[in-house]
Image (cartoon, rainbow, N blue to C red; front, top):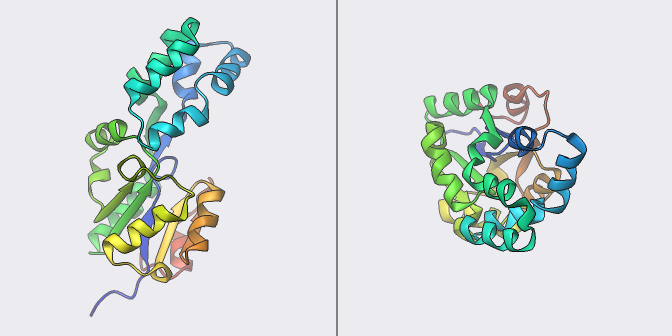
Length: 204
């Protein structure tokens, strides 16, 4: 008999792996106020998200260095030392993923991620290669919370929105998932993810 358990769809950053550029920049810019200024005015979230949309890191770094040459070292570090922005896996979430796979459930992901760093992260964290399907924003040139990226997953893998539970740390992404008809879990620590999923009917 096919499983009646909802299909779990994971985000990756800050759900399965812990990502924060400040892990790196605290080493490079020890003064907290100066580091905050840099993150808000040079290597901004808006600049970084364009790599998630598909812009290459080489292009992104060159463009920003041309505008802020005095920060060349720090800008290049975002690319060259990117893995220092990821402090490790989130153990409980990885255990949930592993247990779902062990039960024979199909598990998917939708993630905002650059092409280059996704490939590197799959090599670093082998569990990222265990999904039955994954939609990476840079591959699609779509980023969450655009509803279109959720529809890519649903249509590509033949999933019904109402049978999926999406987990993400962003409230905007959760709202968008619900808008397309998915159940959703806002991943804000501390959270008992296993219990929360069971409450939504996931058999785990």
